[in-house]
Length: 338
Image 1: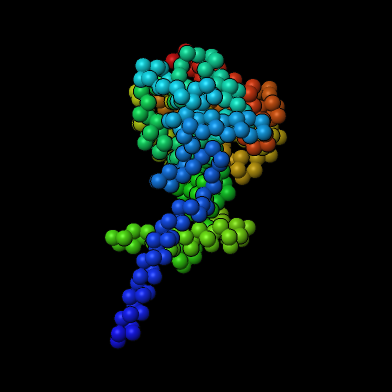
Image 2: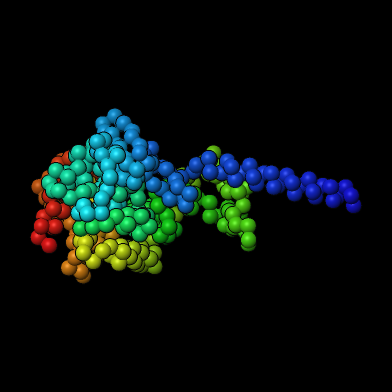
């Protein structure tokens, strides 16, 4: 009996020590998709790095103490309540990926107006992530006159994951959420009182990071039910953004577009992703019709006569300096005419 008791004590102490070590290393073993400009906070939310600068081949990114993208000379700026502001939320399109700040939507807005520009967009953010960031942080900035939103997700994730998609999936966590669900060691999230077991979490991450082969994943086909979930999610999140914003501010929704989408729609040869983007855009457009302080920018219309190579700076979806200037002009016109 003594030997059994001793073994149990040794086993328990070993488990406790492993749990402590796992807790220390679990946060250092990263499986989320994160851009170099971003980091995970304690809530496992993707945020921009604070007071940060990074220089890529063709452009640079600077951030201030509020984790907003700014021009280099504004890293130490003070945001005063009295300043009238324009807030950008969403993904890398309003963020201005692949262009310097001066050539982004925010940079062009500064040139065209006296508004203080708050670029709160974060590369690869989804609609839901954008709403949460607005609700928990960005809405605390006072005197916001216009909020501009544009993000490709949830459309990109839904078109890929089809019937397996859910609203909590985004680019940053898609591997972690979708690829571990079926494995027996990942079937529970926590245990009563204690919470999550760090040993299990680190096993999850080691498996995903070093052993999982994503090519084996086969997603369930889309259905009327999954389409309705997708539609309802968009409606719910946009409605929440509208409820969060000040009654004195305007909400402008940008249509979700990619370079491939523009090419395919001009050739009348839409693929699955294009059709999902159209569904997403249709919901945003409809919402813009329901409220006098909500506007929808249809990029197919405002970029009529431009080629995809003129509209986009890369083969993905990021706008060229010319396009960002046109978008900024449209936003200023909406403000002037409201």
